[in-house]
Length: 413
Image 1: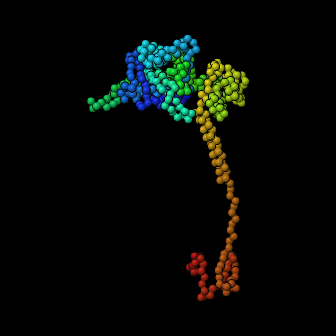
Image 2: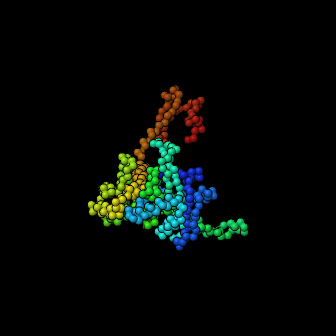
Image 3: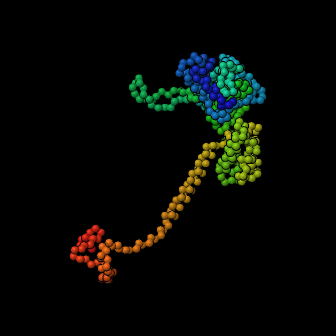
């Protein structure tokens, strides 16, 4: 299943496009007892209910392909064959066969791991898949009717205790606690919808919490080969690395990030050449990512061996093992560290420059400039008066002198 396939189905989960024919289900309490059965013609539901159930159906096909949405294959044994026949019969019944539904409820209740109450909902639909041209324009004709069932398993939780306004008593008092249906935790789609066509050999599987995929439920209730989510694959791979390399390095966490960075670069380079071909965690890929890290040959070989035991013939996608959030955080930290060093270097240069002693300025020469009439020049002379050299300018009775704009008699000396 591809993202475009899931989006094509979900686009139909709205009032004017929905063609769900039937909705069945049951309400299960925490003791695994069925306390309510549901049997509804979907298009006859009241409008408010109609939209609420449509929202649940959408949520059962939400999340990331490979992490929240997995494509499962049936077990390659008699149990898998029987499971496939069962789900084909359930689909072909249009959810009208009570015996088949009771058997499905029994299988789910027995294997589903949940401590509280939950609601099992099943939707039946027949989608007349329109043809598309090479430029993705829809045509009126179709070559296939994709008939399928969609299951959503929703927790039913008691609302939190609190206070509320009671209109009939006109007072604030403890509010009534109700049992509320939450968004699905788990679900499945049969048959899978791949390349805009029905694939009866596979099943779509939804899990809200990618850390809890419930492999036993996949195997026992659905008859499918258990499959890890991307989150679970990443956790398993990191645990292998930490266990093996801790004996040789003091900081395994940082080295694991280095290995992830190499895997990330490997994926990016591969995409530039082969757009749709994924990079798998094969032995050569492991060896390339761990090269030039100062690790011994024994450690690298040990990681290869354990990964082979852990993942078998289905190695995970390399991109599923990369913690992009951690890599981005480390890159940001390194950038901040470089910036801090540059700022510190700049501060030191400024301090050094400010402490350099300035060269002493040369003292200006002392000089006195006089402006006198030409006829006075011959009589001007210098004399030593009270030990100091003075300029003597004789003045006639009708002459006067001005110093800095003030008459000589008014001059401040």
